[in-house]
Length: 415
Image (cartoon, rainbow, N blue to C red; front, side, top):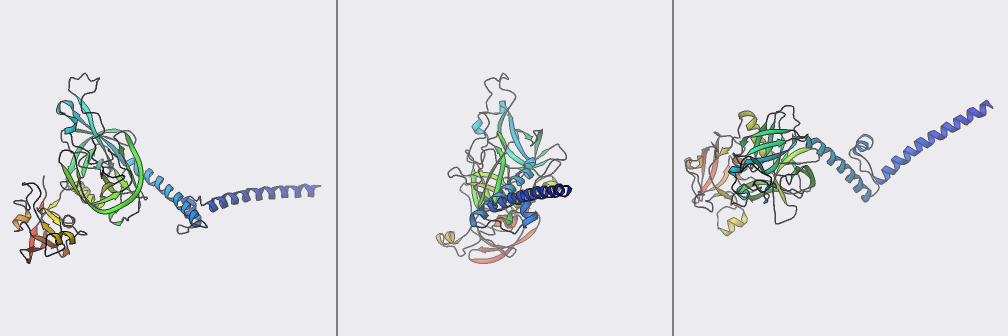
């Protein structure tokens, strides 16, 4: 009898063990077969290079799950360092809200009319919110990167709201005279910061995520898309005739809305690769961002000197390509043609500039800089940005049909 009971227990235990492990195997097998594989399981049991699934459909599902998990992880990594920027101004200094600088997205800032509210009894005094944007923390002691057009009004007051709803008064520490970039400072310590990526290593079709204070109301709004274009040159303007030229802009179809200005565009590793800046109103999901590598020099400059220092040549130019060369019967199909702007005040050579002192004149073509050919892949502005004020460079210039080398000592750009 004892043996029978013992045998019975063994049978029961065996049955339960088989049920447990069989069930687990069935669950894992089902997950494997349907390709619902989380990255942890993929990495620790299957290997990162293993493609799961028996057919294309299952592999696509697996990849979608892995990417979705990466998206969530990237947002969790970056979101704590994304801030909302609220712009306020003395009511007595506001004649009309429409006179306040427009967001480069082509819309008004999404706050009020700039006039006292119906319940305002201040008699036209006090502060009112007139605009907003986004920024992200680049140092734990309170440096914040955003767009210059977000922080363009010296008479306005700026308030930063962090992801944990803490409010700080912010001051404009520095603005870039060339790029649409500004650095704000708040009095805080031990803040979460973003990780800066490498915008030179991005690819068309790569997944990207935009985070921002959409419409000035929905902070840390997350949208997702892909990189639609690289090295775009765009002119983003407001409704007052002002404009910003953005060189080497990254185009994305991630939805970017008013208020997103200055927010981060990140990759799936949770690294900031660009600063969301402008949007084309004539199309759908056509947004542009400034590559983060273009901002790194500004960040380093602010950290070391407290201001943004830019090298300066002092020429106005247009890059020559095959089409421009053919239509204008130019001798070269590359280089930077020194040419004046549309307004009479837009001179080709700035008087007293390094270019002026070196003898450059209108209609000269700058062919090379320190041996580097100047073309659409190597624009003059990008090459100059690699240097510092005071550095001497050598330009190969085509002047009235003759090539010559010209040495130029770069100056410091000042507004």
